Length: 376
Ligand code: UD1
Image 1: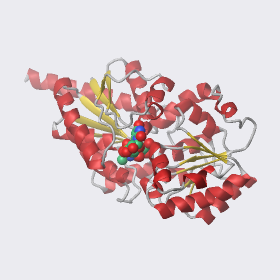
Image 2 (image 1 turned 180 degrees about the horizontal axis):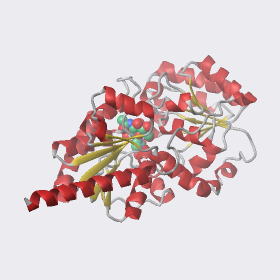
Image 3 (image 1 turned 180 degrees about the vertical axis):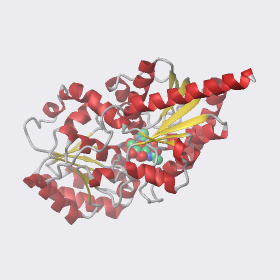
Image 4 (image 1 turned 90 degrees about the vertical axis):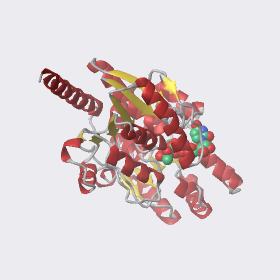
């Protein structure tokens, strides 16, 4: 089975790593890695190939940055050409980034089977670009691999037929568990002078938080209080850096002695940092899941989440961008009252194996039906 596996942006790399490994182990797959080039900085992309021992992409579409429509359209134009050349049996997309929807649209229009890993997640907030990407990709997919019961329910409600939905667990967790030991060897805490100290980690890049000045100021107000209690490490996304500069907030950030603004980290360093933190504050999707598996209390700086299982079963609490709420909940955690949480069902490191087994089974059924048809 020839499969084009699509990656584009940072959160895709850890998901695809588990899937490619499982495909190679199964033996009947020819996995081809395609990078759209949505993320292109060394520390947003290249580092992850090294940390995750991912093969170099067979092809990079080198799309780069642009508006959502421009970026999506450029990926579509370039991927259509590639699909004609490659003639795969399946296109596999992960997550909810612009590369996901762009390649899903092309595959569906060209009648190539499409698999979506991490299907069915819904924030019910259509102002989020990722929500649009998730909704459309799921409607177009032939195989929808889900991480939790809520995702199955969402898909059923949207009229997706039952035989397309497969509850397999979480490939991001596969990669996390497979890399914990290597991540333990990271010296990131020494480099940051944090060995043996309590600290918090902050990840912030959603447009709703960093592109509205008043919201960003609210978050900074909370940080001004929090960093007096505990050092806060803030590996900042390029967009966040740009927005801090354009809103003239750089000095306010620089003036906080307890806030360590650093470049984005690689996978292993970040995993180490997050695992040993007292709390993690984030507006990322994947980090809500990773902290749940690591048992680290997480405060999500959003009003909603497409990953409610991390709140109901895991260590996650939604706090929005209200400074008082952020500070109060952080204090609760620092005082030892953070959520302990449990690991959701099937988040056991075997999701990619299940995906590959399902695809292999479907492909063997298809071969049987082609052989039967030919023998008529
Ligand atoms: C994308 C995903 C988001 C995910 C995030 C992880 C979409 C709609 N959003 O958002 O779900 O959480 O990745 O990081 O796909 N830039 C660089 N270097 C890079 C990449 C980006 O400087 O390597 C800058 C560019 O100025 C660009 C901006 O960051 O305009 C945003 O990048 P983009 O890929 O559009 O979206 P993300 O915010 O990274």
